[in-house]
Structures are given as C-alpha cells and as structure tokens.
Length: 322
Image 1 (tube, rainbow, N blue to C red):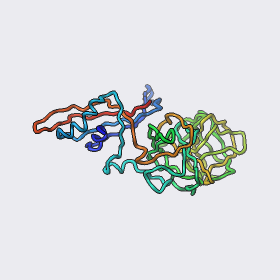
Image 2 (image 1 turned 180 degrees about the horizontal axis):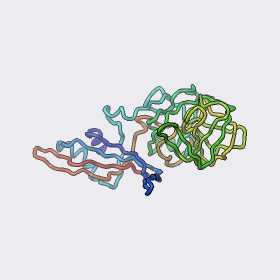
Image 3 (image 1 turned 135 degrees about the vertical axis):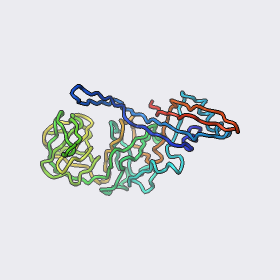
Image 4 (image 1 turned 90 degrees about the vertical axis):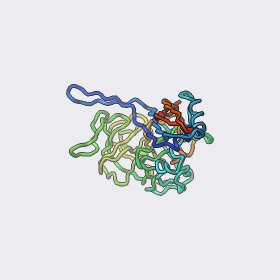
C-alpha cells in the first residue's frame, strides 16, 4: 500500500491519457496529424504532501524505494472519500452505482475501440435507459476470477436503443469528406471502408442512438461485420464503424432494440487490449479504476530537524501495458 498511501494523501494527482500524436505543418500552412499509440497508457504525476514525520515516511516510502523504478505497483484513483467524485458510474444499468452491471456481459467478439455488451438476464431492457455516460470507467474481466488489468473510458453516452426496421440509406465510399456541422467552423473527417457515413433516403435519424447495432436486410450495400452507430450528424446522416470493410451503395437495414437480449456497442477511449473468451460482466465506477503502474521518477528527499522528512519533487508513473 506504500504508493497508494502516498496518492491518498497527495496534494494533487495529474492524470494524462492523451494520445501519442505527431503534427507537421507544410509550407502552405496545412497541418497533418497522425496517431499510432493503440495502447495509450495512462500517465500520472503525483505531488505528495511536502512534509512527513519520520514514522509516516518509513511506512509509506520504504516499499516504494525498494521497488524503485522496476517493479510494478497497484493503485486506485478514488481510494479516499475526497476523490470519490472523480469516477462514479453515471449510467443507469444498475441500481448500485459503483458495482458490476448485473444484466450485461461483454461478448467474445470484443475488439477494436468499442466493447459489445449483451443483456444476459433481461432485467434492464427499457429503451432509453443509460448504460454508460461519457467519461464512465469500465473494466472487462478476462475470466470469472480475473477482473482484468486495463480500465477504459466510455467516449459517448450510450442508451439501450429503440428497435427499428425498414430504413433505407446509402453508405459512403472511402475517401469522401464527412462534415459534422455546417457553420462558420466545422469538424470533418475522410471516410474509410470501416468508418463512414450513411445518408438516409427513407426515414430520419429520430430514435437512432450511439452504440446501436445495425443489420442489413436488403440492397447491394453491405455493412462490414459488426457495425454500430458512432455518432449522429443530423436528421438524415450518421456515422458508422464496422469491424471489416463496408460496401458502398444503397441498402435497407434494421437496428437493435430492447428485445430479451439487446446488444449495444460502447465506444472506448483506446483500443481493447487482449481478448475475451467467454461472457463476463463489466466492472464500472470505482471497481474499474485500478491501475498497474511503473514509477518513472522518484521524489527527492530532504531530512529536516525534528524528525521530519521533506519531499522536494513529484512522482511520475506510467501504466504498465503487457
């Protein structure tokens, strides 16, 4: 508990989960960006309380100094009441806000930057119920006895979707510019075969929701593997993400809904690390905020009169990715 004790009494803890991004600017002023950091490890800077008694120092720091910058530590972000506001589960998938989502399990097809959850006992199937809200932590056990090493953060609000059928739309080909908002400034992206736009020709996006799984029922267009709605642009356009390449063309399709076993995709902030071989319930909130970390910078220590110890610098940590 040495490192955990230091974190629990710290002046502040800085959490950095930014992606590794490279940027270049051409002579004409065009900016090119790229990111290749699939694991995207969490990084932490801990500012410990500055002055410790000799007894406190020995209890907290001897284990830390013995493990040095080689052996891993296990930590939690909200081990104290003062930090509990950071990570509570905000979704409505379970009445107990910091526990497992009792009704849902991750399925064996989990991969990429989303986690597929399937209802297993039909206790939470009301359309519109929040399963996750943006910023919620979740963690997927690898086996029934292993809660899993890596936490993930939901990047979108996800509700149990409302089922629909008979919508007709056209899948964009790769290489098209997809604009999210038409205004003075607007974000956009270039479509690929696995992340592209659907433009409806029958019906509207009313009732569709992020994370909803889509199934083709007719037409020459094809959804590639598991396909879900990543974002909704406007009343006739939305963005889809697929596990394999889509075929651009018109198609008729349906969307998942609150049946006895509804399945939903949860977009996450980084690529899923590892595989799942059996259904397992996700941990959420405080249960999902455990990290295995390596110390990359140890604090400087100054001994003071009166059996006091002063720490003159921060600790730096990085999540261990195996």
